[in-house]
Length: 297
Image (cartoon, rainbow, N blue to C red; front, side, top):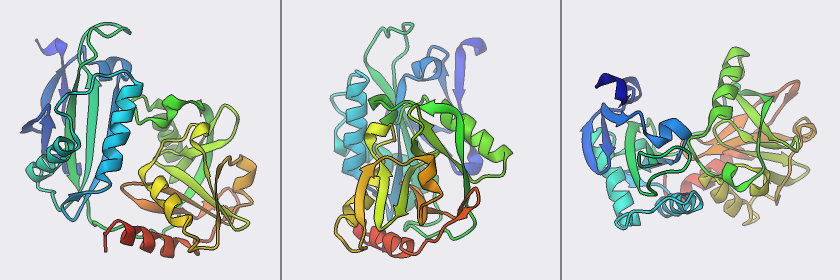
């Protein structure tokens, strides 16, 4: 019945050719029922993962973040879902999609059909899709990159906000706002009016010889590159004091540098916020050190 099926069809233009649906490689369309809980309730978590030089980057960190997220959401973790199985399924998908050398991979884990808010089952299924990336290593983008504060809706400063769930409507409407107003990104705030993160990554600020990023208590995603940069910066190679704390909108215009991090881009310099323009003096070294620490050079 065409009325009770939801078609999952990754976009060919972005490079999705095959998908991995519960361990089976299939063509780039499959059918999920309209009772799919990820579709109905956002009852799903996901990981965006980078393959670089035919290896899953930060495999252990991604695996344990996914396991932690599933436990917090009271999902039943499959007995066979070991880190080795996780890696195998990711690589299998990338190979089938002809992008095993360098790829962006998304794994979405959703609770099985049934129930209303209360699920009938705690068991889960998953979909994995992969698309090619142009470069294995991170490259500094020095093009103009202007951001604005998004104030229509707030991120809640709570544990659920730190998870990568499929409930990302704030990020969606903020992306539309940015596009409508010719910004490259928006910065999201929480109910305390503190800056939490960008639409697609964590936020870092350099100010008065301090490297500052919002703490997880503020509601930001527990990002992979965020963790790596905090480790690097604490080695004192940059002459900066590392602070996980709060960033107010007022702080943004006093900052010397602002940048966004995520596992696909690495580091994205922000060049302008309102009338304030920023330097990127430490970012080339920081990115070089990040590439070296992850064996990407």
